[in-house]
Length: 296
Ligand SMILES: Nc1ncnc2c1ncn2[C@@H]1O[C@H](COP(=O)(O)OP(=O)(O)OP(=O)(O)O)[C@@H](O)[C@H]1O
Image (cartoon, rainbow, N blue to C red; front, side):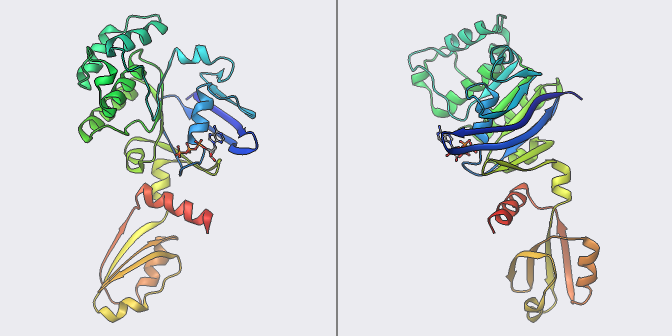
């Protein structure tokens, strides 16, 4: 499978302050790739460099094998971008904004505009100033999709959408992905990333901490263990190497376990346990774990 996005040692300094340092990863054709990190980690800097809005200090970024700085215009013919914040001229009608956008791609997008405005219930004849924040976001979504791009770069795309519209948006993304569209999905909402993405990059303080298949990230990581003891006194005696984030409540103990399940079971036989459950943690927990590990 060929790479749609190739980022190689990408570094961006804003004057003396760090944006991103030595960021390298690839996104393959047809992937739904998640990009996650805490505030100020460098997600927007990476995205803005991909879009040609920022020039890198060093390193390179390519989309469709074209340089993101020098060939941005050509790249954009096949790229759809949803920004986290949307700004439009207030007095323009939605249909005029969308038709104006469509002209850039030199193709007739009217059918697609009508289809998408039906899906997202966008009133094409209204002016921007009449719209709520969420409805403006929907206009940005249509704008990103109207020319049927091969790559979608999404920066916090669901912020402002109500749950119904979020679901519709995900349905549309799945449809697009089935048609072969590659999706680069940057989000703070980790449950969304977990639901949608097949691979994920974690960025922190400008550097990539990990690039991993979602399934592997979820299964190779720690597990969430829940134990129920027969007697409340036993709860205080539980001590197993590899247990972290422990919480105790009456006869119940919950913790995250890092290590081999076999080793855990060997340790558990010494306790009188009534019930046991082993679950995969959420992406949120994994993310917090990486974050805490780095900080601590
Ligand atoms: N225009 C700028 N001038 C100076 N520093 C900047 C500028 N834009 C971003 N930075 C710095 O670059 C670093 C990365 O910021 P960036 O906006 O890329 O992070 P982010 O991961 O998108 O954060 P958030 O999730 O809060 O949007 C931060 O330390 C930020 O302060």
